[in-house]
Length: 496
Image 1 (tube, one colour):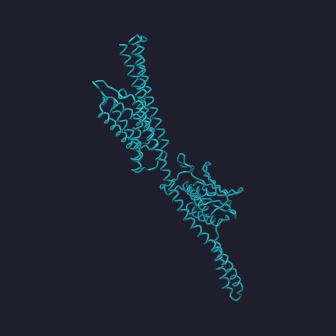
Image 2 (spheres, helix red, strand yellow; image 1 turned 180 degrees about the horizontal axis):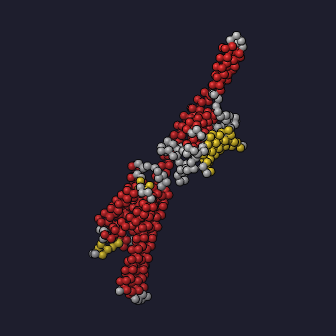
Image 3 (tube, helix red, strand yellow; image 1 turned 45 degrees about the vertical axis):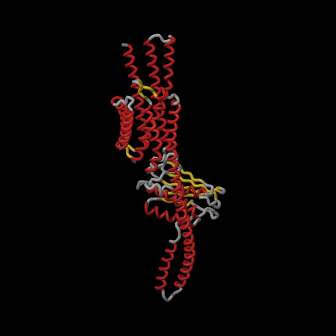
């Protein structure tokens, strides 16, 4: 009776540890899904609970009602069925691309299976403890049969507990590493990229399926472990599994590096096109502005002469009065050719004037202050580099102000100063207080849908600034966005 009671307690303890391990596995699964996908349910916690409990129940049901009994066909069928349920759960409970759901499901299955076989090595190596207990019995150190049975059961329980614990910890560690390595979660994978990143996971999963099919063979009604027949597999199999894990993780890192490299190439191509177009525009602007200044000066002199002539027409007072009014109006029209802003740089004046009217057309209540934005006469920064900085900084500021509520205070402030050979430009603008920034990203993320053609303003400014041994920095003070640009006042070295 005591032996039966001990056996029941032992089985209950083992099943309890098993259930806890399966629940923790389910928690790791929902953590992985939740990090990459948006829940279709209103509550993310509810979705997480469904995945956690569902995974544990599914594993327990399959083990109780569909035991494989060392049948390779049943083992393969169970894993395929489990994979199918996993993919369906991702489809019905989470929003996201099917490609990403497929990758996450296969990779988690690979992590789970590889973790199990690596943790299983604890049990294989721990079997030597049973040999030690057998030696103790033969030597008479353990006399009682019940004591021997208790020792064997406790040893078996401890080993299996360590297996489940190692299994759970390793799975959690791998999921955490994947979430950390896979940073570009918004990137939409193409089919070729899916095959590249999915192949290591699928290979690792198939290796584990193969091991489950051959790890135990039945000879004359007695189960025999493959490790007992080929002892060297104790080293070979863990090595293969570890290499499989490394291929999965390094595959993810390589894939992310490729995304970053392609994005940098796209930014560089677009930036070079913008710079080229902007340089031509600036040259044309300087030419037109120079012509307008000369023409304005000449016309004002001509108007002054004509007005004196008209004033001398004593016998034609009516004609003189009419001509004087006309010429005064013409003089006021010419004065409108003057830019509203005077910074000491023609290109900067033109850009500020253009952006001012653009901002006013979108937001009547915006306040723009650039009185302290002064450029010295000996400024050696190229006009098109200055245009890149001003255009992108002002565009970002206008866009941020435009997203604010109608009643909010909107303002843009710009100033500049020089310390020795270093020239500083500071921008401040109001914004909603909410900003998007990817992890480890240098600059804020664009809120526009077309991320390939937008969101590169900061990178364009950075490349222009670096040509003058400079740098740019940004920070947030409450609901004020501050951008500081520092450049050395010297000729460009031509590096783009």
